[in-house]
Amino acid sequence: MLAAAAALFVLQPGAGAQTDESGAVAGEARAWREGHEVAILRELRAFLALPNHASDAPAIRANAEHIVTLLQARGATARILEAGGSAPAVYGEIDTPGTDLTLMVYAHYDGQPVERALWRTDPFDPVLLSATHEAGGVPLDWDSLAAPVDPDARLYARSASDDKSPLIAVLAAIDALEAAGRPLAVDVKFFLEGEEEAGSPHLTQMLTAHRDLLDADIWLLADGPVDPRGDPRVMLGVRGVTRAELTVFGPARVLHSGHFGNVAPNPGARLAHLVASMRDENGRILIDGLDSPAQMSEAALAFLEDGAFDDAAMFAQAGIARPEWGEDARYGEAIAHPALNVLALSMGAQDGPATNAIQTEARATLGFRLTPGLPVETVREALAAHVRAQGYHLVEGEPTPQDRLVHDRLARLEFSEFGYAAAYTDPAHPLAARLIALADAASPEPLRVVPLLGGSLPLAPIQDVLGVPFVIVPMVNADNNQHAPNENLRIGNLWYGIELYAVILAGLGGEDGAPSR
Image (cartoon, rainbow, N blue to C red; front, top):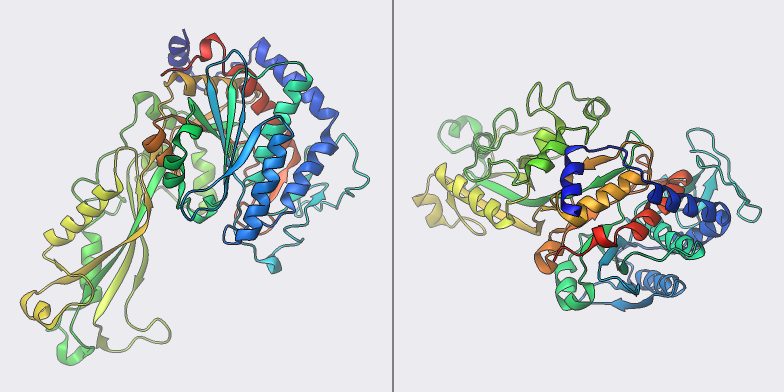
C-alpha cells in the first residue's frame, strides 16, 4: 500500500498533501508550543551558551554531557559513545510499545570556530533580537521575556542554526506529543555527533564499532536550511568530494627565460595544457571514466527538474550571466554530473613581480565533486591514468637526476586523505517516500524535494556500514549565516521545526510505515 502511495507522490512533488491526521498533530504541537515558548527558548539558550569548537576537547565533552541530560529528561536512555580517537558522540533511545519501526535522529552539536571581532555580540552569550541586525532589531530581555514571541525575532549565537536548534525542536516535539497524549509512532534513537564540522573523520569507525546500537530502519538528519524561497524542503543526497595536488616539473634549477626559452620545459605552460585537457570550456570532464552522469533513479532526476532549486535567484546572487554548463542548463542538470574545479594555481614568486625566469615547477590544486555511483578511488585512478596518457611520468617525491634525463615530462600527484563518496536515497524507497509525504503535510507551503545537493557531507558511511536510507529534513532559515559571524535562527523556523518533527514522529509508523527490510 505504501509503495503505491510513494510512487504516486514521487510523480506529484509538492502536492500539499496535508491530511486531517497530520493537521491535528501539527495543531496539538502548536498549541503546546504556544504555552511553552519561553521555556523552549531558555533551554536552547543554555545549550547555545556552551562553547563547541570541535578542537576544544573539554568543551565538546561538556556539550555531550549536557545532551545526555536533555535526552534523559525525555525518558530516553542516553550515554556517550566513542571509537578510537573520536570526539564523544551521544546515543539515546526511546522505546515505543507496539512498533517495530526505528527512526534514527541525527544532528551534530559541534560548531565552526569563531572570530569574535567579527561578531556584533558574544557568540556564546545568546542574544534574542526583535528582528535581524540589518532590520534594526533591538535586544529582548531574557528575564522579562513573555509569549507570544514574535516569529520574526532572531536568536544570535554560534550553532543557533547549525546545528543545535534542530535537536531542541525534536525534543520539544516529543514533549508536545506526550502532553497531547499522542504516542510516538516509532522507536526513536539519537546519534548526535561532536566532530561533523571537522569532517566526521571517525564516522565510519564509530558506526562500525557501535553497529548494533546504531541500527535503524531510516535515518532522519536534522541539519541544513529550508529552501531560500522560504519553502520547506527535504534533501535526499549529497555529492562526494576529493582533492588532488598536481605538480608539473620543469628544469632542475631556475633558468634565464631568454637563454632557455623554447629549450627548457616551461612547467606553467605545460600545467595549463594538462589542466585544459581534463575539462572543456563548459565544465564537462574529459577524463575517461569520470564523464558519466549520476547513477540515480528517473524519479530522483525528475525532482531535479521540478523546482528543487531557484535557478534564477542562485545565478543572480552569485553574479553569473549563465551557467558554465550551457546557456539553457538548469542547476540540477549541472550538479547531476561530476565536477572538476581548479582550486589553486601557483608558480614562481607569490609576492612581488614575476621574474624573467623559467621555474622548476608549477602546481594546481584540483577539487572533485562526486556523484552517486562514482567511488573516490575511481577518481584517483582515472586522474592518474589521464596524466600518464598525456605523456607524463609520475614520480613520488622529487624527481631524481635519472628521472630528469630519461623522461621528457615529469609530474607528481598527491591525493588528500580528506574525501568521501556521494550518498543518495531513492525517493521511491517506501520509508523515504513516507517521510517526504509527512514533511509535505507539515506545511501549507510547497515542499521542495532535493534529490542531490551540489555540496558534500560525509554521509556515505550510513549506507556503506549500516545499509539504511537517510533523509535530510531541515528547519532553519536559509539566511542563518551558518559557519559565519552572526549566525542566527529565525524563531518562526524553530516553531515550524517543532510541528514538522511532531508530524513525523507521530506519523512515520503504523501500517503504512512498516519497515521495508
